[in-house]
Length: 240
Image (tube, helix red, strand yellow):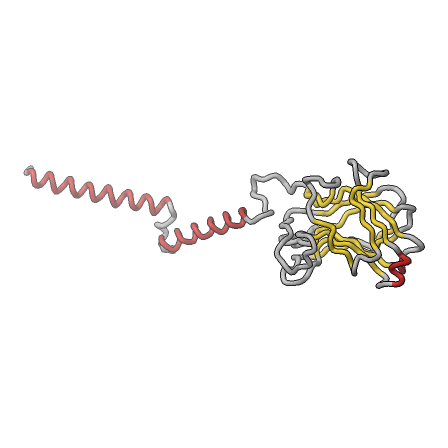
């Protein structure tokens, strides 16, 4: 056989091997199927992967390998680094309310708890109701961005007791802030008649959209449903 013949056969087998490698790559990627276009399929795979990565990177959305939702505290102790949200939304004006976040007598746990005094005599001369929102950032009634993505939380729990027992809170609330940057959902517990002893309460958050919550916690009540005084205590407020 001549040198030119050998050279021609070598070139032929080089081309065969190249085509074979290309076909193997297409088959591996699923591009060799007759009912799909290789380029379109590859683009679809990449788009799906990118979407999945973007979803896992969204704040508050755990990856499949991540731990379940960890407790997210609104109040654990005065000035604790674990605290989130600020009790700054005094309703309707704050004139008939007193708030002490560093109360130390007969707390549920830790060194401090929250004491709330609702002045009923004052309220009867004013707007006859009162409440406080824990907001993020402070004083944010939905006019600016803030809040947290709490996706994965199943409940908000807190401990409460009345100063005498019999004090009534009409609503304990999670979310519900409106405005330019509204909360993504609302959950309410109440009415609640408090005992003189510490009891744990739960706001059910299952099925709620918690992707944006700037109003982490609130309570509200009125002079109409209370007697001569309304002083109560809160402690260990957290999302779980």
